[in-house]
Length: 287
Image (cartoon, rainbow, N blue to C red; front, side, top):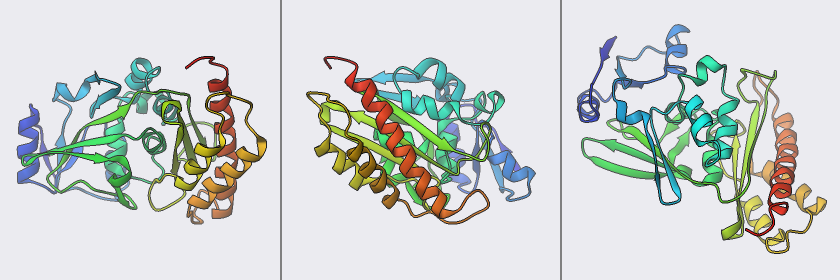
C-alpha cells in the first residue's frame, strides 16, 4: 500500500488525478476500521491531514462552509448554535476520541446509509463542494448518494467542504441503536423547520439503500402547520407525518434490526422530533 502525503490542496488534487484509486484519509475512523478488519485494502492512502485550510470554516451569507477537515468535536463546540441538527448528530458519533478525529466529509465519503450526519444534511439542504484538477462542482446533498456506500464523486474528485444553511428554525436529530452510546444507528431521523419558507426538511438514515428525504411528509406538513399563529400541534397531524415518514423508507432485515422495527421506530421518531421542534418554534414569539 502506497502512502501519499501532500502538503497543499493543489498537490492533493494532483495526486488524486494521477492515482484516482487512492483513498483519502483524514480522521481514519472508517478507513482504518475497514483495513484493520481486512474488509478492504486500498492501493494507496492519500493523507489530507497536513492541509491546514481544510480544517477551517467560514460564514458565507446565511450559509456555513465547513471544511473537510473540521472534526465532529469542533463542529459541536463552534457551530452548535448555527447548525444545531448537525451538531446533535455529531454528539452521537462514537466516543470522544472518535469525535476528535472524525469529520462530516469522512461520513460523506464513506456514504454508509447509517452515517449519522446524512439525515441533518438532507433536512438542511446542504451542498457538497467537490474539486479535482479539472475544476469545482457543487453537488446538492440529495444528488450525492447514488447507492449503498456509493456517492456521486468522480474518481479524481475530493471533498473540499460542505455548505450547510444556518438554521432559521428549530432542528432535531433522533437515532435508535442497540445501546445508548458508541453505536451504529438501527435507524435515524432528522427534521429542520424553515419558517421563512413555510416548510420542514427531513432526513432518514439507515432505513433504505441510501439516506433520503421523506418528500411526501414534508409536503404534508407545509399545508398543515400554523406557521403564523403557532397554535399547538394537532396530534393527528403528528401521527400522519410519522406514517408518511415511514412510508418513505425501504428498510431491510439485518443483524442490527428488522425492517418492521425500523418502520415503527421511524414513525415514532418523526412524531417526537416534530413535537420537540414545533414546541420550540411556538414558544419563540415573533420570528
